[in-house]
Each structure stands twice: as structure tokens, then as C-alpha cells.
Image (cartoon, rainbow, N blue to C red; front, top):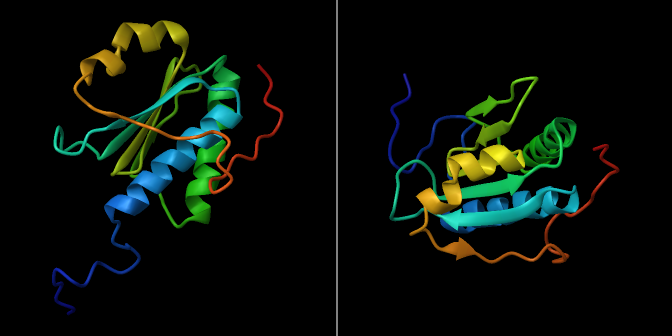
Length: 146
């Protein structure tokens, strides 16, 4: 039997630091924006909540577009050795969610983004700057039908 210590994470799980979580959140924001997601925001929840370190919020233009964006985010996550803890992606969706533990992605349609108002609910959370044109992050977009 292997005894776990603070310096020995379980097999297959790598420790994640703040810089890695922030970089992933920015990558997710860039992917969403590059694929026609509107009003993309990163909220820094560190020190405000134990739910996650960052929320990435975005407004989709259609169900199909939102599902396509979430798929691109999943592919990027796999490429950087991240797996979601949970994904809420019903076929008929007004709110898609992917929980990467330290980063939670919320994709809404416009009506539900306004109704649930996570931006306002977490109004004390600082907004993190990110640049959609930053070459350091993945911004490859593909044609997404609306």
C-alpha cells in the first residue's frame, strides 16, 4: 500500500499552481472569444470562494455554437493534461458548464446570462484581463455555425 504525503499527489493527478490555473482560464477565454462567444469575462474568485479560483463566463450566439465552443475547450484541456471534474451539457441548453476544479467555465445564452447574473452575484470578484490577440494562448478558431 502506498501512503500519500503532501508532496506526493495521487497517480495521474498533477498539482496545479495559481499560475497554471490563470493561464488555463486565459486560454479558455481566448478560445471562447475566437469562436464567436460574446462578452467573455474571467472572474478571480480566490479569497472569495472555495468553489474555484476562476470563473470564465461567456454568452453564446446559439446552442450549436455553445456546444462547439465547449468541445474546443475540452480538446484544449486534453492537450494540456486537464480533465473536467464534471460537465453539464444537456442537448437543449441555455447554460453549459465545465468544472475543471480551479477553473469553471459557464457558457450561457443571452437571456439566461442576464437572468442568473453571475457577473453581479460575484460583483466583488476582480475581473482578470486577457487579450484575445495574445499569441501566447490558443486562439485557433474554426467556422462555427450559428
